[in-house]
Image 1 (cartoon, rainbow, N blue to C red):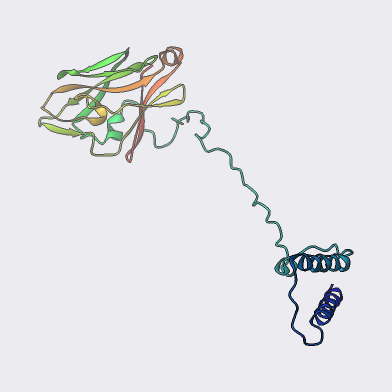
Image 2: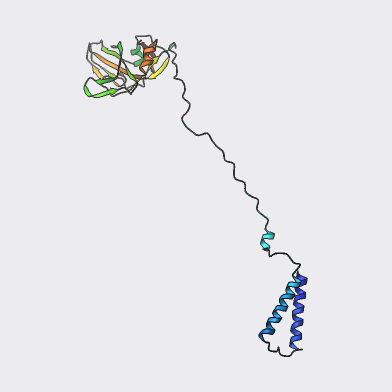
Length: 240
């Protein structure tokens, strides 16, 4: 390509020398003459460039190495997070060495020696009303029922005694054929789980423990226990 351009430049210079006449002033040319010279120059350019099929290329593009195509980072798919698989209701072993004798559950509750706790009975209801306020009512959810275990706190001593069931961390559960249902904690004034009051000598106060369960579950159960556990041990009362 460079040699061809040199030849073209030489021809153009030779043409200018011929036209100037060895240093003479360049003669005036008509439009037709200037057009003829232009056509001649174009023919020369096409003659020496006829076999050159190369195209203009940016030098930076030739020198610059192509960057490797970036591959997309692999996407790590995680299983959607949701609720854990439900486990079977835990089964309580009621044969442990720390179990208090049946009927001695008041020892687990940490009651005073003069205070006794006697089991009265158990019944199924759709709602439970506070004895001191008709507006305070606990209702069972649709399809369920309240299993109400009734007991009596009795002061057998000669002095009044205070009873504070909120003092210790006590767990109340209903065990139905070995499976557990947590007892409810309510604001009822006679709820054993939250009971706070004073018993006069020889006074008896009825208290309740409520558990919301499927009615069919209790009807078909062979054995039902009220299970109580605290730092003092564990005990139970059979209610069915």
